[in-house]
Length: 406
Image (cartoon, rainbow, N blue to C red; front, side, top):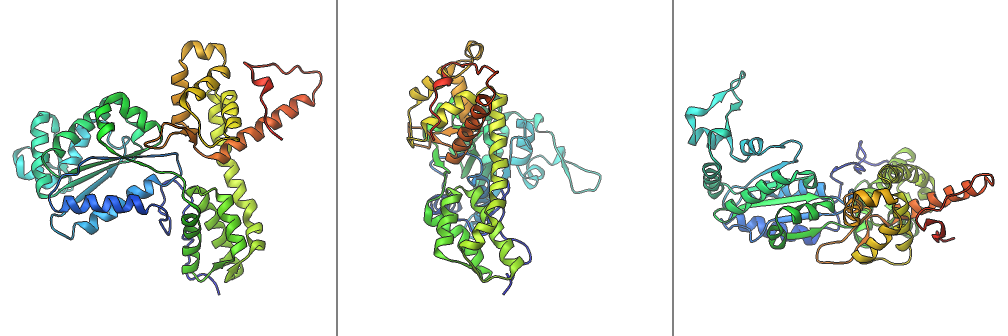
């Protein structure tokens, strides 16, 4: 029996919605509560900040929120959602043009409205109004139709735009139902701290991390089962473990298994089939790893990355102070002269090599297997250099004694 769907349901890509959104029940339940309150005319007690390493499903969750807004709009006050990124609206003026709907522009400022060449495009200059006027109009519109603003890739905002956005959110939310949802990499937390610590303290933080084992299994099994394909216990256990519960890797595995089941018209996948597609999964995963490693190398952070990776082979968490010590001991002297250790630590966070989840002062690996890859590549490099006896291997800030393990 071949799978009923023509197109592979798994989506191993940037922000692509998976066939089954597993493991986010707590976040989904809380967001549903907030949207229901907004539909009753109540302002959210706090805005939401989602952050975590890339590939964890933040964009997927934002897409889900947009869909929930449509569902909630069927009851009481109709809600509306705007989903965007700083790239699409890099300036406050452009954002204002989106926050206030065309209907309200025509209602409040009919004399300033011009229609585009096709007669259906609103042309309006928000600079003709001061910010207090714009905030007042948005408040009135949100009283009739609450707004959920979903800002993806929020860590890429410049500090001024971020500050303006937080101010708008605070002013509108105090008077009408308005919810700001920011989603980004671990660097988002640092950005918000630098531009408005009070917002970070009041916001509802959601750490979007790896799934647990059951959610990982569900994310693979349920879409396959919908197409009449099952996975035996041993094979599933291997896939779950090999995916490391990382959503992007889960989708890689699911896509590979689905393709095989379709190609061979299989109803059941065993350890033999998982072994058959594992090379394909590993190839894409290694490419993913190498891109991350190359970025660290370009930033001259690879020696420190190796030392950090070695640390995390023996522990799941560590402190900020200890990470700073490791970084200081494994950076070129000229790098330390131009940037502080704290700045280098933030670079590791921005690139998701490490992160600390909400409500935790301890750091953990962004992707544990990436650290193992960095160590393996370093070991290969050392072995290659040592096989050339006429070349001296220079010691670099203590790295020559680094224990890379077996």
